[in-house]
Image 1 (cartoon, rainbow, N blue to C red):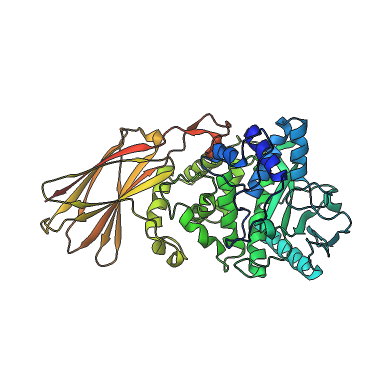
Image 2: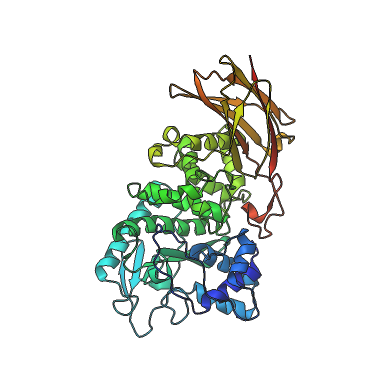
Length: 502
């Protein structure tokens, strides 16, 4: 994706002196507080650049910003390339890295195991203890075992002699002063594979001062960031929302007992079903949408996530699919219709206790519209649903409605099947059960269904309307959504008529 002007502005802003941010309470991810440093004279503020790129975000986010810098570097002028090199530089490159740069007077120390090396300094502002370095090393070796040896992902690309040898490098620095737990940096192309990159990671030097214990913060940060390094060796150009959602989901696979990623659930579609699934901005939606990755893994097995990544791989020999495209083709390859799969995900978010093994601790997705069904007067609604998003309508019997009544719901979208509209009815019974009935839409996008509405048996009926469209135009044009394109079926209109019948 081409992000030249916006990325260069962000690079120059990062190189400007920044006001240190207070250490935040959020989880150990690679997000950061909004940037406060001004851009270079004559260039727009970094917040403006971010607004154009994400559709409203004014925050920088280290791993993904650095990924964008890496991708933009070949198209920058000499000044821009120098700025990009400085941001992408390792902490051991004196005076370069805007995030972490060791004092050149302090000799770095190193601890290495079979596959990972940890580099640190023992004095100065970035001081780390040998004991903490050893703990970081053991944690990354354990994460490698889980993600590569057990789950089958390709290991990060060897980096030659960078950092001393080809082992994966982790650096410790006092980055918590900037609001960071950790981040990873793509730095060189894998020879013969322009879509893949070698990388290294930087983690805080003691993980002190965060909401969770240093040990817990280290574990989830290592799980999340190391998976970014794996992603860079699969497809460094992949859509940002999928990179973050799958990395946050990976925390569950490595450090399930910590459950730090639960704090993001209200930011994703579990908390905001009307925000598109492929949204990437400072509102942390991508982090919260790890719950979608969890749904995928529950439906098809943990290996399904790797199966999707293999479809997205930049050098697999097959067409290089983008995130939503790969998801849709993977689901279809498993014999399930994509719109139905997405619809069931939305439905599950309304009853997380039933849908997820740990769902008792999750919030319920909020309802969108509430309406009463009355005698002789149909309830008419018209709603527009963004792409890869949903809207719900709760229907209850009015007090004057005769007891023995049923409910007929008619849905009209006016869109053909390629637009992937989907609808269903959830009947919540007074005894506690929930019945699901799909509203099958014909080729013209029209369907209806009749359900029981007797107050003695039914507490409420919820109509679920989903826009599961994965159609985009203008891919690779630096848009805010999947593939950098513009959704073809955004704000899909659903007309609803609900009527009480005998």
